[in-house]
Image (cartoon, rainbow, N blue to C red):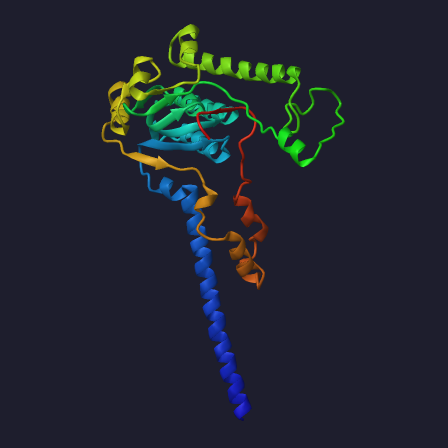
Length: 321
């Protein structure tokens, strides 16, 4: 009889433990969903009732950010967004990334006004993107410009010689994989890279000339890679006015006829670094046990929300890395 009572008590304790872990699992799942939706910006969207001005922050090194590009496309198509303020604080990045975001900004501008508010920095590809807007406002002490392109590669040939290591190559043609970090590039390789840089550079210069309504000669004078303060940028027509975000909104109201009572709301692309939970751990906890209560949910889909990390590569339009 005592054994039966002990068995009953054990079963009750087991039930309590199972109940606790089931509740804990549901809580973890709920928090994971909330964290993911919050990071994706969905909650921000849900809390944006009616018409508003979208604030888009572009900061740090610029990549061809697919999540940012998707968000910019949504802004373009949103009837609730009446205007856009680009909050810019970037030293630049890849030329391909700058070009992609520039084109997305131009697409928005065809449907609604876009103004850039430069915080500390709008250099290189950052300035390229700012030039895609209809109006550029910077602080007097902001840094703008650095119009140009750079191609960098490491050169380890002297180090390899010192440690007695040689890299042997068999190539289909002399210019394959040039320039190489393992030997001094031949003159013809430097010519090819210079042509690549020059082609992209003049594309950038012509973009500035067109967007800032100046001659190509004037744009070339400003495109030797130097940076300007916001004050000097204004004098050189790289900036339209001095001020901050308030001045940017005032321009949208006075020049583009937007309602002065419109709120400015942040739009943020999904950022996997803002996921507050280890989704792989959640997957193991929730799905590697009894998954019968979660029919229709494929655990393999969880890691898919985390995109592969992007790295700088190719031509760069950047002030300092």
